[in-house]
Image (cartoon, rainbow, N blue to C red; front, side, top):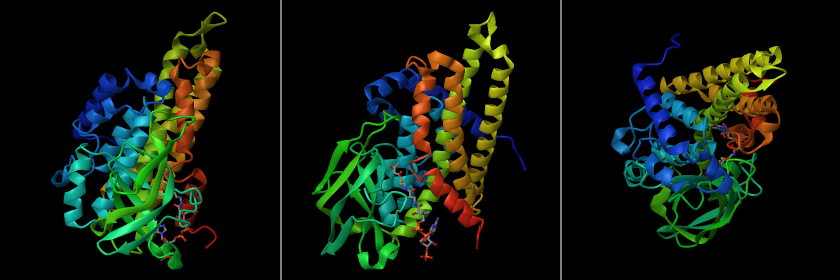
Length: 381
Ligand code: CAA
C-alpha cells in the first residue's frame, strides 16, 4: 500500500492551485452574492484541461486518471463548490455515459466538444416525483420515424441553461418499469426543448439550477445511448462514478473552511490570548483535521480502485457519504469558532457552510448512500 502521490499528481495539483488562485479566488465571493454562473471562468476551464481530466486524449480529454480528477475537484472546492458542482455534472453525469455506453460515432460526435470545454454538459434525471426514487420517471419518449418525441419535465438540473448537451433519462416503455428506461442526449437547440425557472438556492448560488421542459421535443434517434430499456442500469453506474467526485466536493469545502479557521484562530484574541491557544479550539481543530484526512483517504481509495479497474461502487458511496458528512460538520464547527464573525457574509466560512449542505442531498442523499452501502455489505440478507 502506497500513500504517496506521484510527481505527476503533485504537479497537476499545483497547476490547479494556480488556476484557482488566478481565476476563482478573486471572484468567488462576488458570484455567490450575485447568484451568477461565472461564464468567464467556465470558458477557461476547458483550455486549462479541467473538463476532461479523466478521459482519453483521443476524445479530447487529458488522458489522466480518476485520482487526478478527484484532486482537482477537491482543490477547487476549497474555494468554490458552485464551480465544482457544475464540473461534476458536466464531467461525470453528462460525459461518462456517452463515453462508457456510446458508439464510437457518438463518442466522436459529442466528446471532443464537451471534453475540450467548447460545449458544456448536464444530466437530466431528477423529476418532481422522481428524486431518491429514481425509477419513478414520468418523462416519456417514443420513436417516430427517424426521431424520438419527448414529453415531460426534469427539475433541479445543474448547468441547466448553460449546457449544450443534456444526457437525459426517459421512459420508452412505461409498462416495463425500470427496464423501460432509456438515455437520450438532447441538444439545447432541440425543437420543443426549453429551460424553466432558475432556482434560488441556499448555497452553491453560482451554479445554474433549473427545470428542463420537453414539449413534443424532437431528438434524432442517433442520440439514443446504449439500448432502449437499459437506461436505469446505465444511470446507476453513472451515479457510481459521479459519487467519487461529489464526495470530493464535500472534502474540499471542509478543507477550505478548516484552513480559513486555522488562520483565524491564530490571529483572533479574546481574554488576552489568541483563541487558538485555548484547548477547546485545539481539540476542535485536531478532531476536524482527523475527520478530513479520513474522508480524503476513503475518497482517494475510491478513485484509485476505479483507476485499477476493480469494483469501486462501495468505496464511491462511502466516500460520497463521508465527504458530505464532514463537509457539513466541519463548516458548522468552523463557523462556531469564528463566533459572530462566522455568521457574517464577509468571511468565507458562512458561504462554505451553506454550500456544504447540498452535498448531503444531490447525486443521492446521504440516506440513499447508506442504503446502497448496506446493500453492498448484504446487511440483513
Ligand atoms: N450498477 C448496475 N446496476 C444497478 C446498480 C448499479 N450501481 N444499482 C442498481 N442496479 C440494478 C439492480 O441490479 C437491479 O437490476 P435487476 O432488476 O436486473 O435485478 C435494478 O438496477 C434495480 O435496482 P434496485 O431495485 O436497487 O433499484 P431501486 O429502484 O430500489 O433504486 C436506488 C435504488 C439506489 C435508491 C436508486 O434509485 C438511486 O440511486 N436513487 C438516487 C438517485 C439520485 O442519486 N438522484 C440524484 C440525481 S443526480 C443530481 O442530483 C442531478 C444534478 O444535476 C446534481
